[in-house]
Length: 214
Image (tube, rainbow, N blue to C red; front, side):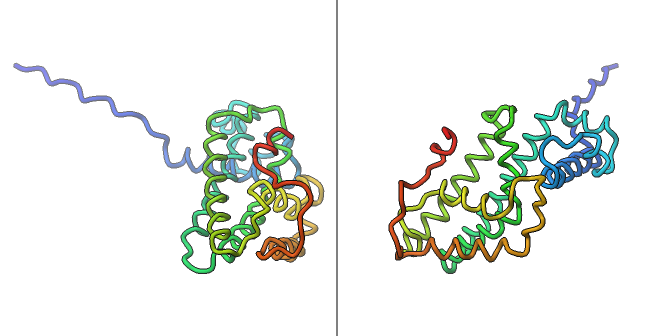
């Protein structure tokens, strides 16, 4: 009698509830980093996410891993906003405007204290998320330049620095108090990006390499 061969072992996949818990932890961490800064206790993040401390540490063995995931998630959301803008077939500068206002709502300024912290800013996940986001935003800007709507003496670094500075103050510093004014001030900035330029900008266009070396 022939012995039945054992069925191949199936690769284990994270359960749906485990994935939901991970997403809740990242969402709670993102909110609390914006409100209080990146040093908020992990116990408080677990409490807001509605999970136990063990669940947080099972997904993220240390604070650096959680901060990295939050930064990647913010960049992914910005990339998605850029893809939506590129999918628009109408006015190129209006697509740029939509991206900028959406990026402000994502609260990219909260990334600043996290990116400058001690964790590995060259982690492959971070570099992949950053590269994807930057290339998409460059594409939006190139399309507006080609249409003759975006002044040629500004670059990606100029745009992202201005959006971060105008959208929110640093995390944990009453960052919700200026919400009513954010989009008004961003629109003033965007009007200054339109071609033809009304003035000559001092200095040179700020590149992402300039920012990384600063």
